[in-house]
Length: 130
Image (cartoon, rainbow, N blue to C red):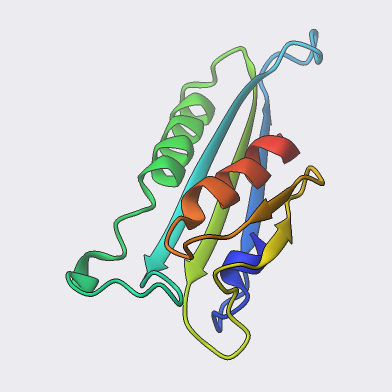
């Protein structure tokens, strides 16, 4: 997440929400993880067209947050953790580059071959944290 979001003026965020609707069984948990690329111009592998639609890659994050809100409002007797990775894939002098090797939250290294393939990197971090 850090590598993907570091060129943005808004820092990347890993939001973790927890609902304890069944405190008698704290070990029984459901988990949701979603990616929220709030704007994606492709990074240094810039998208050539349709940039006005590049704010649409946040459906996973929005779905997770919507489900979480519904569970809380309904007072469902479950324990739920919701992890949402929120970034903007931007261009600046400090942007990550093709051929960079980055380390994921889990500690695995990944070679970047295309900076417009950021979704799998941020979702991997959200899943690892979860």
